[in-house]
Image 1 (cartoon, rainbow, N blue to C red):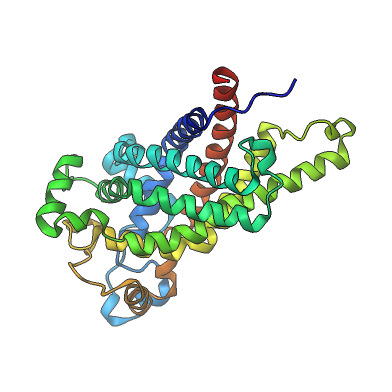
Image 2: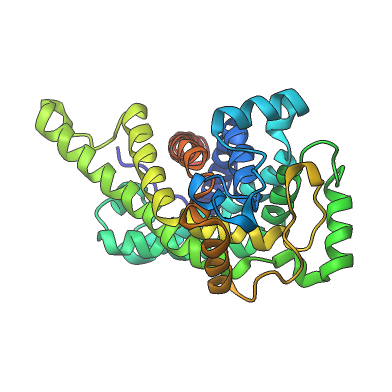
Length: 330
């Protein structure tokens, strides 16, 4: 018997609830890698030996490798240091993924003419990419201030400059005003368009490939197009990796704008001065001049290691939670 299509309001509740739950799980699981990534991205001192040969950049960076950074953070801040900034991160990622999956489902429903998820797999890959990009933009604007606070709290070590979200928010208002809560939004939106487009577009593409593979290798696959949790995990893993590799330099630029002009303890290196960069392109130019091309890829390894399981956990948790909520509410 064919399942009844849920109403628009019920469908939105399913998508937003499943998105928020999956985002919260993914963020909490991958928080240590996110903290390490941010520490690399916000330090101005170069980590490459080429850049260190320059006379004006002789000071070594605090973090030089992922293993060394892990040891330092654990020694200086304890295990809790790896979840620094996780509260604003959850406040950011839960509405972000809720908005993202809700808008994504709305766009796919509009393009396919059906609210059933199983009918969305037949959409053109181009529509999947466009839907993912638009959903990512909507989610970014809706949750950006929490992303900013997450970066600020995760980038500081011990002793803390900001003990909590409130103190960080007050200092942002005092030094930058209300627009300060959206510092770095432009490079974020420019980053999220290809990132979300690639993530969701490649995820749908990998799912289609997995279904074709199932049809070829399993005789009973013709009647059921559903994928196993492990196959969904692999699709999400590949999608997250592809998106992160392409978009990482823009993420570095975004982080620099987010911490621009804010306090930073000297033991963690130089701080980014207020109005250090005129715009996104100037920031990229200055990073290359002062830190070499490697500066745009600081934190790439922990970022990629984090993005792959984060994408996989998010997609699997969303698919399973969405199916469960749909069975309960319809």
